Amino acid sequence: MATNRWRLDGQIALVTGASVGIGRAIATELLGLGADVLLVARDEAQLSATANELGDEHPGREVRHFAADVSDEEQRREIFDWVEDLGTGLNILINNAGTNQRRATMDYAEDEWRALFETNLFSAFELARFAYPLLTRHAMSSIVNVGSVSGLTHVRTGSVYGMTKAALHQLTKNLACEWAGDGVRVNAVAPWYIRTRRTSDALAQPEYYEEVIERTPMGRVGEPEEVAAAVAFFCLPAASYVTGECVAVDGGFLRYGF
Image 1 (tube, one colour):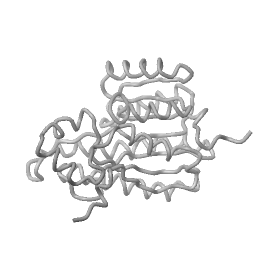
Image 2: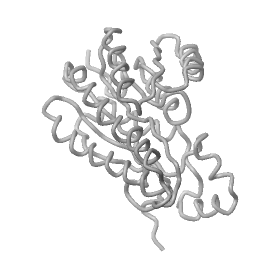
Image 3: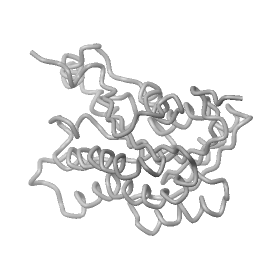
């Protein structure tokens, strides 16, 4: 019987930053398509609650979780020690974990900008390397990196965040070319403003919110589920000839002219 090109039955997906927001939405989307998920996030209590809730919502699927801070090199290794110990294998890696501190370029302390690189970029690089031996056991596996429009154009997130996301997009292209022959597809999404806990403070400022909406042709901010749908597409067998791509989930923001 032919594989359903629009399903992920039998596949195992690891999602970082999975307890809330976009990460949780991605996990939910993948579960709905038939995948089993391995959830990683820093907050043990929130992560455990999310895993239990998703398990209740998808009783036929496996939902496992591991609390770890992906900005820490040793904890990154511990994540894949855990995956290896599970013995489930791995088909999909979603590098979603990210953070930001908005500062003028000259106002960053060294520990602040280095922490942003560790979380947003170096974690994805190392987790992809750790995942590689598992992903290459299959004829076709997938990595999806959650980037940002700030890695493609200037937005008011601060230069460091923009640098980390631009580098993440470039990592996506390089790995896509380097690992294509090994059956690993690598793609990225670049969201604009998405309604999450992390964006709530900025979007709560009426004047700023109006500026965001004025620059967004669709006239609204996005929802986590809309990013999750784009991520899930890249993981599907239906996307088997797509690699090295970065798709903006931005309501038209990047295409807006005067």
